[in-house]
Amino acid sequence: MSDNPTRPLIEMAAVSKFFGDFQALRNIDLVVHKGERIVVCGPSGSGKSTLIRCINRLEKHNEGIITIDGIELTDKVADIDAVRREVGMVFQSFNLFPHMSIIKNLMIAQQLVRKTPKKEAREIAMHYLQRVKIPEQAEKYPIQLSGGQQQRVAIARALCMKPKIILFDEPTSALDPEMINEVLDVMVDLADEGMTMICVTHEMGFARSVADRIIFMDEGEIIEQASPADFFDNPENERTSAFLDQILKH
Amino acid sequence: MDVLNGWWDDYFWGAVIVAKVFIASLSLMIIFGLLGAAAKLSDNRLAQKIGGAYTVIFRGTPEILVILLLYFGSAIALTALVQLFNPEVRFVDVPPFWAGTIAIALIVGSYATETFRGAFLGVNPGSIEAARALGMSPLQTFFYIRIPEMWRIALPPFGNHMLSLIKDTALISIIGLNETMFVAKQAITVTGKPFTMYIVVGLIYLGFSTIITLTVMGIEKYGNRTTVGAQ
Image (cartoon, rainbow over all chains, first blue to last red; front, side):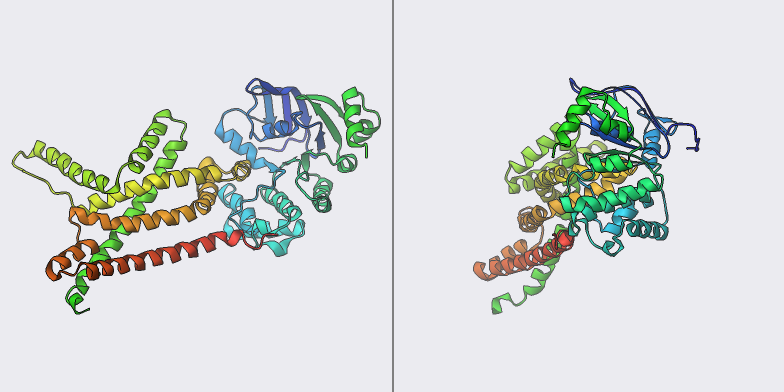
């Protein structure tokens, strides 16, 4: 993968995805450049998660073309592996490996996928644990940590692979309210450092302050793409305004 | 207790054979159980059917019958095979150790098949997805994520399978393996003291099962170190 500053990191062209008869994505066109921070929002079942899960091929798209940093996603396993090495993902339910200590959670993929020597992998892991401010939890097991701490570990685990892009799939939706901010703080730091991120979230405060662009989806389609200012203050589409009215009501 | 004089070393060597059968059949039982579970979970219809037939047959027939059929069946099959090359041979004897070990491994393995299958299905799909998203291959995910997580779920029922296995070793005396039951029968014909002789066998087996239970408890405790202290 060579760095070409003008080439988009993510290009989706006319992408559709079906689950049986149900069409989850309709004709999605999306271009994301290096350093862009995208927030994806929309009602549940609108295809937000499916969209980002197609980017690292946790879901396989049925129509259209997806190209990640110049590599087209097809059935070729080598290409899928290459893309997954560059695309980190953070899940709603953290998905830490329960049988491994925190430090092992951060080391395992480095060692197996990146072939990083153990000592170096441990140093990298500690570095990112410090970044998410929980180095003292290194030897504990996931279940011994709070939800917010687990999600910060999950972010650190993704960062250890030095990805070019990080996908966040509703990273704060499973958290108790008092823990949401500690996770959002880490994400804001990442954004400030220029990480390319796509974030599915309902945290509109985060969207407004961090996103370069907000994408609104409904029924598998991208209805509207706009800067936060335009999106919140002058939504073009009725469905967007209806959605914003719903979630900003209180 | 004087009647036991002269039999202690026979019992001792009988117990050594029990231990050997247990270790050999335990290894085979794990293999049969994992293969059975893999077959039942596979997408291949034929493999599913073979896995299904395996569990139905070995869970649905008396254990002693399986041992006898396997012992005599393999002797007959082997004799026929050898006679192809050398018609002079009248009968080939199958070592009762191996016939018995394989038989009880197959029986308990059929129960372990269900245990492993359930445990594999119990692994959090999110862990597997996370491993794949980190770029780990299906094989790496299997060995580093699925097997260790599966194992923790499977361990408590697996401890029961180990106890079944140790107790089933007593059945192998029927095909002439000189383990503790066999020793007891011999001792009874000489001394005429069945109760005493069988009680010794009972104590030996209790000793074995205590060791197994304590071992499993230890491993469970180790496995559960990751779930204690939860908030």
